[in-house]
Image (cartoon, rainbow, N blue to C red; front, top):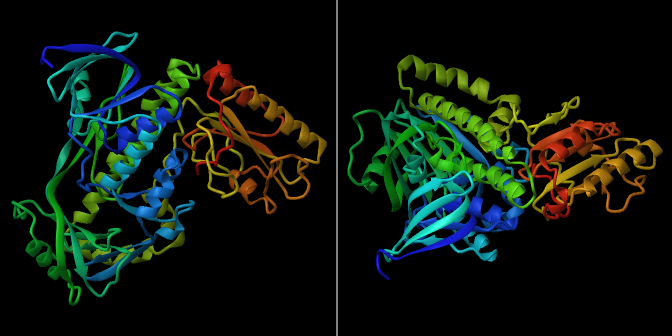
Amino acid sequence: MSEHSSTETGTDVLVVGAGGTGLALAAGLARRGVRVRVVEKAPALSPVPKALGVQARTLEVLEDLGVVPRMVAEGLPMTAMHIRSERRPVADIDLSLIDSGYPYLLMLPQSAVERILADRLAEDGVAVEHGVELTGFTDTGAHVAAVLRHADGRTETVRAGWLAGADGAHSTVRHLLGIPFEGTALEENFATADIGLDWPLGFGDGFAFLDRGRPAAFFPLPEGRYRMVIAYPPGADPGGEVTRAEMQAQLDRLGVPGARVTDFGWSARFRVNQRLSARHSAGRVFLTGDAAHIHSPVGAQGMNTGIQDAVNLAWKLAAHITGGAPRDLLDTYHQERGAVARRLVAGTTRFTRLTLLHGTVTTMVRRAVAPRVLGRGPVQQRLTRAISQLDVAYPDSALNAGAAPSGGPAPGERAPYTGLFGPAAGPGCTLLVFTGYRGAADPEVRAGVGELTALAQARPGVAVEVAAPEGDDGLPGVRHDASLEAHRRFGLTAGGYALVRPDGYIAVVGALGDTAALRGHLDRWFPRAASAPTAGPRRQAG
């Protein structure tokens, strides 16, 4: 075909970039019946492992796509991280304390995550279009006219309702929008390699050695190797290709008796950039993942944050496109995820700086204070919640309604994990109704449950799950919560309800008999319920 030939096509959403973020976004849209195309300028999915580690919160929000069993089967659960400073133990982080159905950090390379997501997308009839590059677009206000260049030179104009840039740190979409990408690069340089390791510390846990400004970390890989990462102070990076000898030299510095590199695989050098897009959206165009924010890899937050961007945006776009939700629902994407990105960039910057400190006084304080502080149970709980991203919340979201119950989560917070409700079976919201200790046999309770159920059933996109004490419910399909543990975790032992969004965050919470907040929320955000996609019972993503 001539390089001047062109065609014009249409779609609901055009996703630019087929990394983990773009694939998760496309899969979430296709799952909900949205027409979507995914274009990627690279000729194939990248085999480079790059990021490593899937957090518990990411696994939770991906449950709806049905990919988690595959990811867990291929990955390696890491349940402990040990931190040493100048050869002395300072902290042992117990990741099994993570309050989730996934109490670990799943060690799974980014390349495997992307392959699994691409396979899931293909199951819905969407294939990634490789060798296709976005060269320009115009947001007309009514649609986006995007110009694509194919590998054979053919150009194509796509008339898309919406465009999502998931095209990485050097995002063409962000550049064409003219949105600033502000921040700095750390002075330190890093080297990483996947290595075979023979040492007396065993296999399966993670290790970090804070060695006076030249730290090294080790993360287990599913195939039995370790991912080793070295941080070099300014001017100390040897440059060139990362070598086996370089990794061994650093290993020798750490003082682990008999430790040696037994084989050497993928390697790379990099410098950490901490940058944040001024906006996550403009008109009919959105930025997701690294196109909107990049930061230190400390804590394995990058790929996870991008996927969670995608899940947040996918359900909102689908609710607008297929469910009749108002357009300003889409404004909450920037409101919620922009705030998360700002906190994440600030937090990873501070934590990275702490690991790189090397002064004598700093080192002494770290060795003396850290073991006392980090060994405490409440500190471990807070730390594991932060690492696993279970503490991500949207306290200021426009989608929140109702007041936090005593001892329970507030609107905008993650729905607690209870193990009570079944696996996800639909793409919509879930209304969780709790009868309280009186149970559904109580006439007043039964009336309240009936009112809530009728209200939800008038919205085909809202599924209903009821929890009641065992033996006195009198309701079909009820979830028995004999100990009232699930009730307690939601702060609703006296009865009440929580409307859980498709991404597992609480939108509305209230008491039985008080439906005003729920009615207001549904009327405001989902007024055209009759056209919403039908959702069956789903697991509370939490």
